[in-house]
Image 1 (spheres, protein in one colour):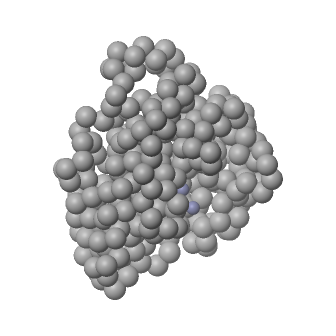
Image 2: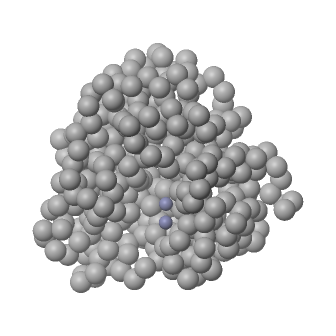
Image 3: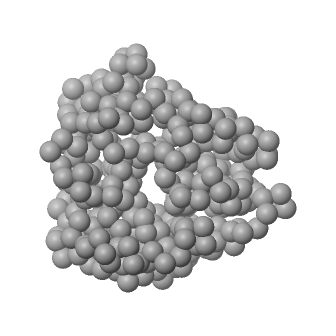
Length: 310
Ligand SMILES: [Zn+2]
Ligand SMILES: [Zn+2]
């Protein structure tokens, strides 16, 4: 775990099983009742990793998280062996924004996100790389890198096991990161400035046009990930089936195995030794109570089963 308050010794003794023996599988969870409650929820539904928002994802307001809630988060995660903790940044943040007002608000909001992530001992903060509308893509990329550097400036991330993960997007016009080239470019620009990595979303890959469904397509996609981003750079897979067809650029998540991707692709990602170091986190819809647990169970049931059998 990344909690700065924790001694290195206890963090080391915690890791008994090699990651290969027990893949990290979880889901995005609510923080209702206190942020630490999400760690309990994760354990209750049989997840050993999870994602949360640390603020309302559609408001600029920056909440302060009480120190005792941060301490409880660390304590519960250690007790239940729930790791890594992934925080998803607010959807309002656009680090590539042309408007100076939006750009400055985005830097302040991202700085708040990183501060709360460090206080909570989160390993990862997932960030959508933003929209370069009104500029050239290259200018947007430079602006995004500068914003992230400014947001991190002076924060004590060096002592923490923490990374900002750039997520690939569904391919909307002007969005940075709709292909692996762009995710890789931004990660490379940021590497000297900040601790970075990538988060890949199965639904976004599929609707952006990558073939994640057939075994040949999947191999080709992984070869591109290796060449353009780097396999070690990928730390989190967002495990979402898709409501929309491949190439549609429509970002609508579906329950695992019930969408246009199908269960085979999830089996392939989960059992691929090249992604053994990754955490697998669903952001599937909750149409009925218990859907989060159900999707986690579907993912867990796919572990250790050959990818070729349907
Ligand atoms: Zn995602
Ligand atoms: Zn999405």
